[in-house]
View 1 (cartoon, helix red, strand yellow):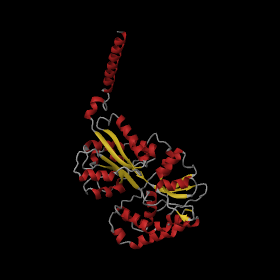
View 2: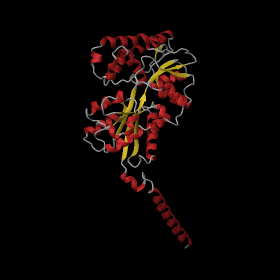
View 3: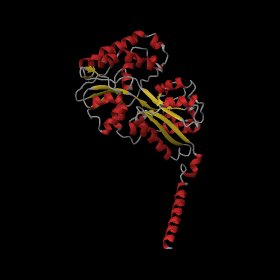
View 4: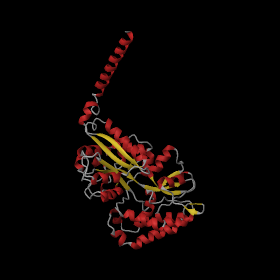
Length: 396
């Protein structure tokens, strides 16, 4: 009998606890029963793990902000590069070709260079025009002149600079011509990654072409900049071939590291003294202690190509209005500071208005007052193909 009473009392207590927790949960505007009225906006992205972490950190802050979490709740879906998962462009193409609508592809986070590949697999109008009048924080964006079209809203910048070992390089090159001469004067001490595997290597090759073209070319996907300027292209690839024997070698052969991380590993272990590198990757590794303090960053003139990462809304998204509210948060000064603190992403807003920054001195040193922005569409593919056909075989 006592055992029966004890069990009954435990059951009553458990029910009371459940009711108590349920009542407590219902007080939050973004949880419990009330959450049924708050749409979930899913941001889909792809790339490195650091990008995923930054998107998630801002999403968590959004979901905790009472000014925003009653309008939408953010979830992150991410395809990490280098895995066997189906790529995000392929997933979008499959959904589009299947005629799906009202999908959870609410917002696509991507580098603007990836837009053309998605449109090629779907349709030219796959991404909808975005009404910036419904995004108050769009006024914070300082790179409006770099935006091509009305379907893309930037939320962070990406920049490549010259990363070098200050212990061995007292006076780093300040111009492209000085860099090319330094490579020849210091054989084996420079490397750039295979352009088909990493953007830093791609940037090194691309700027060799576009440094010879009119400035307007870097903002145009028109293939005339390739077909009508064969001399400039030939000169650039002749330069790549000329520099080839002076690059980093192992076992007597020139090596082109795989991916951006490959060339940075050589720099971190002091097997080379210099390489083009993404600013945020260098700073993140310095913060983690995996990159020596002696590694510094140097801009050159003309600058390496830069880009913007941002948001697009597919026409198959289920809640386009809620998506605008989420984008608005990512452009807030609070969110931009989180992006810097999480992955040292270059802000797209006035950095003087950002607060509570980690390593604010690093931001000042690498701040992109001006961005040498490139938007060349599918021409980028032709650059990689030609390098693979003409330069890669030299290493065999």
